[in-house]
Image (tube, rainbow, N blue to C red; front, side, top):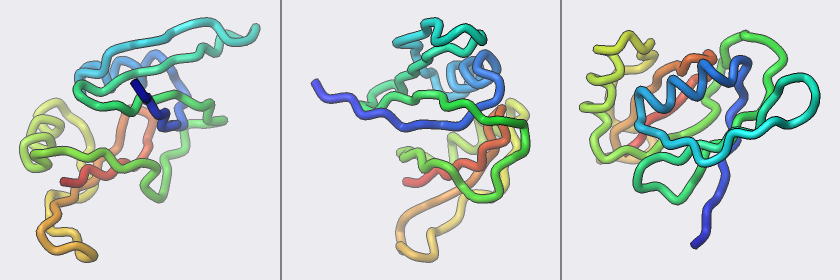
Length: 120
């Protein structure tokens, strides 16, 4: 088995962990103390994916201006509809990717203000 890690900058680990569990069904595969300041080593796994998500410390809550990660999704439109119904900020509605005809993309912000891309 081979698991890769994608690193995501977060300010509030508990809030981010809950966001990805609630909206994407992520399972916690590690949550352990790391240092004396209360920061933890957290790894989340997306259902059916080989890549696990690891949280990096962000110094403040300033939202990212550029996308920080691309999540590949088989049904971007349905996922955006689900996220919207749960109050998640959608930055870009589903549309054809200008660089790749036939590929659908959309953008949203997670609980930490990270600008994320969903792509088919």
